[in-house]
Length: 267
Ligand SMILES: Cc1cc2nc3c(=O)[nH]c(=O)nc-3n(C[C@H](O)[C@H](O)[C@H](O)COP(=O)(O)OP(=O)(O)OC[C@H]3O[C@@H](n4cnc5c(N)ncnc54)[C@H](O)[C@@H]3O)c2cc1C
Image 1 (cartoon, rainbow, N blue to C red):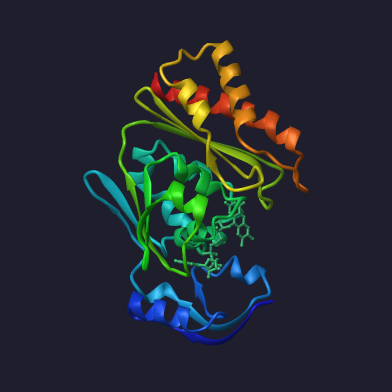
Image 2 (tube, rainbow, N blue to C red):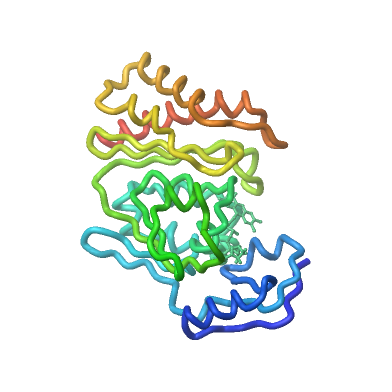
């Protein structure tokens, strides 16, 4: 069970940051769903819910999304679904139930860089930048690799609109458990982006697979080759949900399915 000594509703991000960095045991509260699973003793809980950070703004060339935007808002947003051929819907819909999706937030998910995350895998195949209050803009890829240089608050993200076809695949034992492995694919013109998450470590782009697929005819042989490259280039591991070998072979299956779905959408 978590304990919270005091609760603070900042009116500006500056005030939130100041309070957060005042003491080591102060913590930002997003949706609060994940924090509640733990046993942290929080000094001051810095609640971001009154900062107007729950929004999805569609501009001509990008979407800007506030840190407090919930998964249900992401899943049901028409502009996002249309532009990214339901990528976010596919990556969110199987996560537990609607009550949880109404709570959990985009900012907390990205900032925490969870290895099991489905949403992060999907987001990684888009051109996304993350805005941290202190450190400023950084690419999602870099943020996932390196994390924040110092304690920070994720304010918003920007997803560039690129014309393409997108697909998300996952292998899950049940809706109340995390994915055993997940994969997202983007095809923008002749370029592909492939990300694999829940390996069980955090999502990563499969750069060699992406390069191989570029301008490649999707014959059975080439799809098989792409799967072999994929399973060889990323690190897969073992945990209670599955072994390294199982994840390696399932990643190939998910890639094949995603390629099939994207080709179907394209034609
Ligand atoms: C029961 C349960 C099952 C789940 N199953 C899945 C699943 O199958 N697949 C999946 O992808 N995800 C799953 N999740 C994770 C979920 O999707 C969210 O990623 C997670 O709950 C974090 O969101 P939150 O808003 O609850 O974070 P919180 O609990 O509010 O915060 C989590 C951490 O992030 C920090 N934080 C919050 N907001 C910010 C911010 N803006 N800037 C900086 N730091 C911040 C907090 O201080 C805390 O350390 C599950 C979560 C729960 C509780």
